[in-house]
Image (cartoon, rainbow, N blue to C red; front, side, top):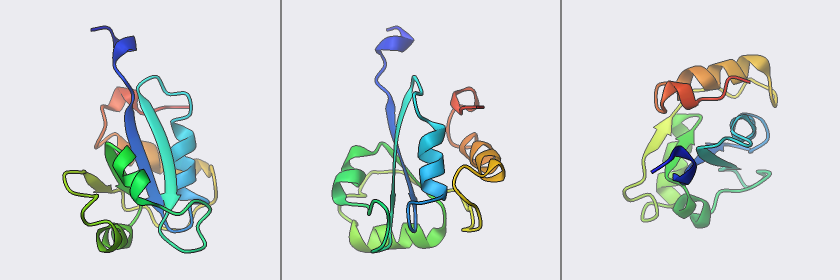
Length: 121
């Protein structure tokens, strides 16, 4: 099977408001040949609020903070069965596409994805 025939893995990135951290992570994977990324937030005022559909779509869920894992487990316990949830431990102190945030995302994601597949741009 060639690399082109392998379907992309679906990555879901979660933060509180889906404005800075998770949206930056989603943008990092725009146009990636092996991954499809989406993002959402846990809070009522989020740009895109996480739903059961997001959870069902994802192969792997990355959260920015432990409290995001807790919120997901409270609301979507059944949907999370068998889904890996990875906490990246990235604090809420960055703006959208901040270069420091991008570097931190790359560093943390290399611990959970094949390092050569994490975008460098």
